[in-house]
Length: 68
Image (cartoon, rainbow, N blue to C red):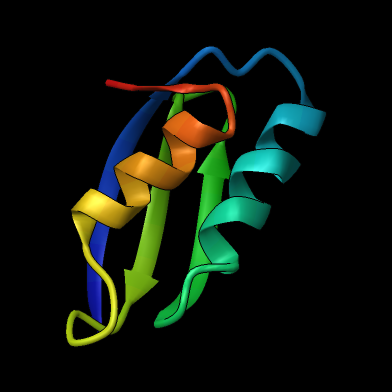
């Protein structure tokens, strides 16, 4: 299991946190997601053979948030 931290811009409430968490957890190979509104980032534990940073960025942006 690998781990990555990605900056997420545009989150303003816990609903945003749930939205970002949901789109990331829906990706195959993602084991755990911890999204922090205060820090503006998502910490993701994942299987690098199934998913990677490009898919995380695409999912976050498709949900309407910015990747910092």
